[in-house]
View 1 (spheres, rainbow, N blue to C red):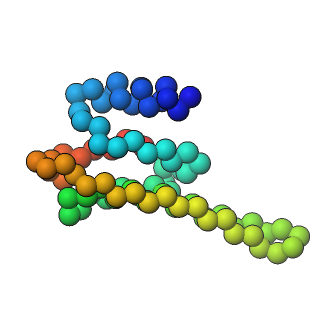
View 2: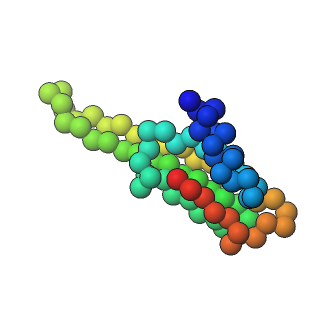
Length: 83
Protein backbone atom coordinates (compact mmCIF):
# COMPACT_ATOMS: atom_id res chain seq x y z
CA UNK A 1 0.00 0.00 0.00
CA UNK A 2 1.03 3.61 -0.33
CA UNK A 3 1.34 3.99 3.44
CA UNK A 4 3.72 1.01 3.68
CA UNK A 5 5.88 2.41 0.85
CA UNK A 6 5.94 5.78 2.59
CA UNK A 7 6.97 4.16 5.88
CA UNK A 8 9.76 2.20 4.14
CA UNK A 9 11.03 5.40 2.53
CA UNK A 10 10.98 7.23 5.85
CA UNK A 11 12.79 4.37 7.60
CA UNK A 12 15.39 4.15 4.84
CA UNK A 13 16.20 7.84 5.21
CA UNK A 14 16.39 7.92 9.02
CA UNK A 15 19.83 9.56 9.06
CA UNK A 16 18.78 12.17 6.49
CA UNK A 17 15.98 14.68 6.67
CA UNK A 18 13.17 13.93 4.25
CA UNK A 19 12.04 17.09 2.50
CA UNK A 20 9.28 15.62 0.35
CA UNK A 21 7.80 12.39 -0.94
CA UNK A 22 6.06 12.40 -4.32
CA UNK A 23 3.92 9.70 -5.86
CA UNK A 24 4.83 9.43 -9.55
CA UNK A 25 3.01 6.16 -10.12
CA UNK A 26 2.37 5.62 -13.80
CA UNK A 27 5.52 7.45 -14.89
CA UNK A 28 8.73 5.76 -16.01
CA UNK A 29 11.93 6.98 -14.28
CA UNK A 30 13.00 8.48 -17.63
CA UNK A 31 9.81 10.61 -17.51
CA UNK A 32 10.90 12.27 -14.24
CA UNK A 33 13.31 15.22 -14.07
CA UNK A 34 14.63 16.63 -10.80
CA UNK A 35 16.62 19.86 -10.70
CA UNK A 36 18.10 21.66 -7.73
CA UNK A 37 18.68 25.34 -8.44
CA UNK A 38 18.25 28.72 -6.77
CA UNK A 39 17.45 27.15 -3.39
CA UNK A 40 14.61 25.06 -4.78
CA UNK A 41 14.03 21.45 -5.77
CA UNK A 42 11.90 21.21 -8.90
CA UNK A 43 10.28 17.93 -9.90
CA UNK A 44 8.70 17.46 -13.31
CA UNK A 45 7.10 14.21 -14.45
CA UNK A 46 5.81 14.15 -18.02
CA UNK A 47 4.46 11.32 -20.14
CA UNK A 48 3.11 11.58 -23.66
CA UNK A 49 1.61 8.76 -25.72
CA UNK A 50 0.45 8.70 -29.30
CA UNK A 51 -1.75 5.90 -30.60
CA UNK A 52 -3.27 5.31 -33.97
CA UNK A 53 -6.81 3.99 -33.85
CA UNK A 54 -9.48 3.34 -36.45
CA UNK A 55 -10.72 6.92 -35.88
CA UNK A 56 -7.28 8.50 -36.23
CA UNK A 57 -4.53 9.49 -33.83
CA UNK A 58 -5.11 9.78 -30.11
CA UNK A 59 -2.79 11.66 -27.78
CA UNK A 60 -2.48 11.20 -24.04
CA UNK A 61 -0.41 13.68 -22.04
CA UNK A 62 0.05 13.69 -18.26
CA UNK A 63 2.29 15.81 -16.12
CA UNK A 64 3.04 16.61 -12.50
CA UNK A 65 5.12 19.57 -11.40
CA UNK A 66 6.20 20.44 -7.91
CA UNK A 67 8.60 23.01 -6.51
CA UNK A 68 9.93 22.77 -2.97
CA UNK A 69 12.05 25.43 -1.26
CA UNK A 70 15.11 24.14 0.56
CA UNK A 71 15.09 24.83 4.30
CA UNK A 72 17.52 27.50 5.54
CA UNK A 73 21.04 26.14 5.95
CA UNK A 74 20.62 23.30 3.44
CA UNK A 75 23.09 23.47 0.58
CA UNK A 76 21.99 22.52 -2.93
CA UNK A 77 24.82 19.98 -3.20
CA UNK A 78 23.50 18.13 -0.12
CA UNK A 79 20.23 17.23 -1.86
CA UNK A 80 19.80 13.60 -2.96
CA UNK A 81 16.78 11.88 -4.42
CA UNK A 82 15.91 8.28 -5.26
CA UNK A 83 13.38 7.40 -7.94
